[in-house]
Image (cartoon, rainbow, N blue to C red; front, side, top):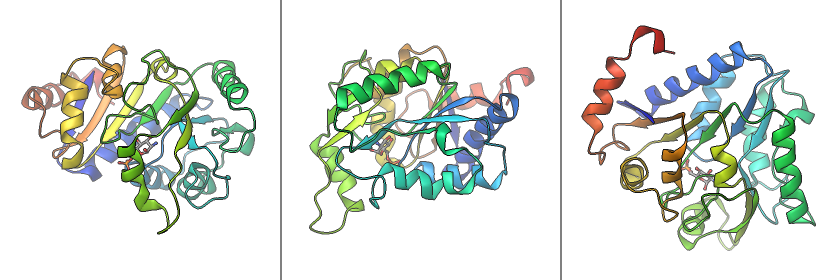
Length: 256
Ligand code: GLP
C-alpha cells in the first residue's frame, strides 16, 4: 500500500488527478471505477479541466441508492452527470451506474458483475471512505468476499448523508453497491480521504487489523493500492513520517 500524504486536500487531489490522467492517456480504452461523495467533487472538476479524451473509456460506479430515480437530485446518477459526465465526451452507453429502480435487484447485480468482466475488469478504482470505514456502500460487517448486491445503510451513514436530503425527506435506507470482493479485483485502487474527521478510520484501515468492522481495511489484501491523504486525514497514522519519507525518496522511475 502506498500512502501519499500531502499538506492540503487540493494538492492531494492534484496528485490523484495526475494518476487518472496518466492512465487515460496511456490506455484510452481503459475501464474506470468511479466513486461519489464530496471528496470526489474537486477531483472531477480538475479532471474535466484537463480536457482528456473520454470517447473510448468505460466507467462503472460503485453504488446507488435503492428507490431513487436517476433524475432525483440526490441520486448518484445526478451526482455523476453534474460533476463529470455532462462535461466530458464519454458515450452514454459506456457509463454504468447501478439502477436504483430495478425491479429485480439480484438479477441486476449479477449482470453488473458480468458487465465489469466483459469490459476486461476495472483498471483503476476510485474510492472514498465513510467515517465508519465503508468503501462504496460496504458497511461494517460486509463480507470481505462480497459481490455487487443490495445493502442496508448503517445508522451512521444515514446520519452522515442526511444533510444532502431536504428537511422532512427521508434518506434512503438501502443501496446497491459493488462488493468488497468486486473492488479487490480492480487492478489498482486509489483511495482519497481528507479532513480530521477521517483520521481515526484511516489509521485503523491502514495500520489496524483486516476486519469487516472496517471494510476499507480489506484493501490491505490488495497488491496495488494508493491512499492519497491530506495532513489532517493522516494525523493519526503511527507511521506518517515514514510514509512521507518513502514518498519524498521515491526512485525517479517510479514517479508518476
Ligand atoms: C458515500 C459514498 C461513498 C463515499 C462516502 C464518503 O457514502 N457511497 O462511496 O466514499 O460517501 O463521502 P465524502 O467524500 O463526502 O466524505
